[in-house]
Image (cartoon, rainbow over all chains, first blue to last red; front, side, top):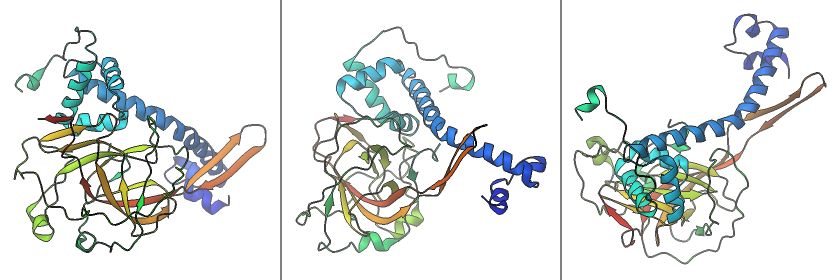
Length: 124
Length: 213
């Protein structure tokens, strides 16, 4: 790519990497390599984030993530983790309904304790 | 995290689309029942579904501007952040929209869908602009008072939508480089997508799996 495009992609880089073509070209190539790699990593990271959120949401109702997903699989509910994490954040009643369905399908271990409330959460 | 979803949340202030639906003479395209697949990764497009559309005779159920079945609470106590907001200014401008959402599967990806908002999906081949589309694979429907959970789909539910635009996504530069081997490839890529505007969600009232909150 020519110099103009390189400098356009090098906006915001530190020091001479945004101004001098030799350095900018190296940094821009590295940046594009990183973006290629990270487009694939983003999918893994997002799934991990969704699983963390679902775990947090279900543990508030006394079920952990593994048992929750097992119960949903048994009931043939095919919602994916992205949607489940959104429901756990924004639609608490729908999410509680899902947790109940999962608990009926697969009781799992009984030793999951809801997280201890600290600070202002005790008042709630 | 709203950016992570392909939800483009913008309540339409455009009353024309809702109140003057395109006449029934346009061909109706139904997405066929897609095979069950756990779409865990929503950001890649594996393949585009091969659509075969059969023009359907006119539906008796009206898609747009359904009357509101639920009782409207002026101040929602449950505080559903994702539910559409009914500010007084918007209500006077347009007919009141029912506060319902659905989880629909299109192009092997799942979306949370509200009437009046649009979503970007994979390119639907054979759909022209201003075509009405019915989405049959509805996995969950939620209203203010109850939730209908599908195993795997909620029976007899359809989500009606209108194709707004068939465009290309923003350009992504695919740069492949191997060090010390003099190999570099610079490729640009624009994924074809379709923007569809959801008009209504119908048919879920008689589903067996109902959970009252």
